[in-house]
Image (cartoon, rainbow, N blue to C red; front, side):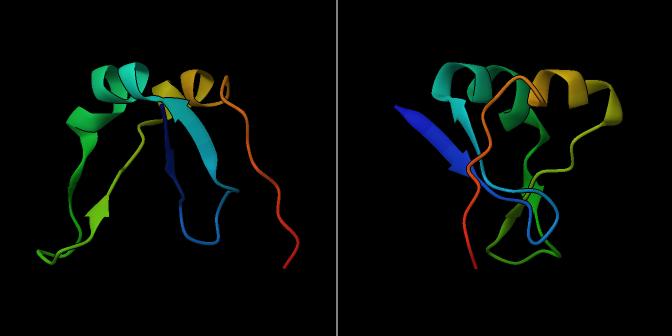
Length: 60
């Protein structure tokens, strides 16, 4: 099963396999401004890892 997430209006949605997400990206999750939303700040050194996954381009 793939896990999908999106950075709002910054990059297209990316599909990441669940195992990789849980291992690398899930520890970075935090609540957005103390609310119910989750934000995922990606450190620049993880960009090469993130860029290995396919982006889903959509027409607006």
